[in-house]
Length: 484
Image 1 (cartoon, rainbow, N blue to C red):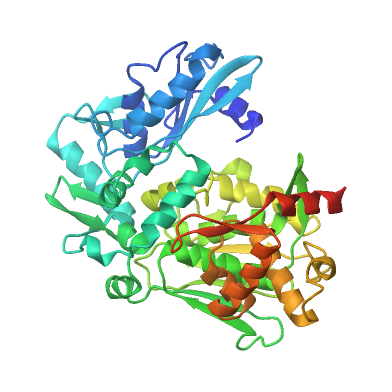
Image 2 (cartoon, helix red, strand yellow):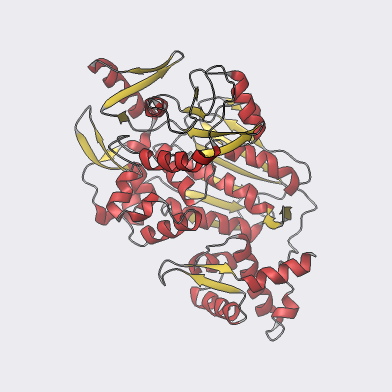
C-alpha cells in the first residue's frame, strides 16, 4: 500500500470499515474488539498511532517492533482471538511519525475475543448479546462463504502429505520466525482456518477450503466432481487450441502449473526496482493467476479458464459479485471471496494484501504491454482481460547460452538456457513444474538441472521430496555484469 492511500484513509475518516486508535507505546486494550468486529462484518482498515479525528499522533519508534510482534502473536493466540486469524501490521512514516496499518479482511468464520462476539456498524464495535443476533451472523457467513462448508467425515489422511513441507518452505522463505512453523500439520490446518466448528449446528470438521488446498486429487474430485481449470493457447487454431493444460489438482500445485504454462507461452520483459531485476511477466500474471484460483466460487460448476490469444489473455471464473461492473483501483473496496484460502496464499507469498492484485496489474501491465491497461469485470462470471503488446517477442534470453552451454548441441543448450530462465522468473520451482514448462520428462529435466548445478548457476534448497531450485550468487553476478 502506498503512502497516498494511507493519507486517503485518514482523510475519509472513521466508518464501517475504518478505525483509528492511539497507540504510543502499547496496543490499545480494545484493539481486538475491533479486529473481531471487522472479521465478522465486512473487513476493514485499522490505523494505530492516530487520533479519532484522523490526526497522526505517531508511535514511539522504540515500541514499533514490539507492537508488531505482539499483534502477530496475539492474533495467532486462541485465548485472545477464537478462532485465530493471523494479522501482519505494516509500518508507515507520515510527516516523521510512525504509524501501523492493519488490514483485516472479512472472515468466513465467526470470531470471538475474550469469549465475546463483536459485530460492526457505522457507530463502531458492538457486542452480540442475544441468540438471534448470533444465529443471523452464522447464517450470513454460511450463505456468503462456501469455502467454510464442513465435511465431518473428511479425515487427515485425505490430504496430500508432501504439501505440508512445501507450505512450510514457502512460509519460511518469507518469514523464518512465522508462528505457524512451530505447529504440526493438524495444528497448522486448524490455525489456518481449515478446520472449524459451527456453533449454530455443533457440526465440526475440515472444510471445503481444506479439500481444495491440501486434498489428494481423488478426494477433490469426489467432493467437487465439476472442479477443473482449463488453460489454452489459441493463436493459430481458434476453433480448438494450439496447446492446453487441464488442471484438477490442489490449488497450491494448480498455481504452479498455471504459472509454468504462462511462462511457456508468453514472452518476458525485465524491469529494475532499485538494484533488483524483476520479471514483469511474473509481476502481472502472479496476480492474474492468484485471482483466478483464490477468488473463485467453487460450488459453481462453471470451469475456470485462462486463454492466451495473440493480442490478449482472458481469464474467467465463477463468482459471487460484490461490486457488479468494471473494477477500477481507486473506486472499489476489496472483498474476499474465500478468506481462508486467501489468508494462506498471503502467508505463502503468492498473494499480497487483499485488493493488491487489481492495483498491481494496473501498475505493472503498462510496463509489460507498452501502456495498455487491463479490464476487470465483476459479475456472476468474473472476467479479466490482459491486453498484450504486439511487439513482444519470444526471443528472450536471460543468460548468454552460447557462452555457458557451448559444449552442448544447440537444441540441448537452448533447452537448458530455457530451464535457467524459468528458475530466474520462478524461484522455488520444483522439478515436476520445470519439466512441465519445458515439455520434457522429469528424468530429462533432472539431467538439465544437474548441468546447471555443476556450473554453480543454481542450487537446491530444502528436503529431497519437497525442495526447490534457486539461482546462485554466481549467476546473479553474471546477470549484473550483463546489465551493467
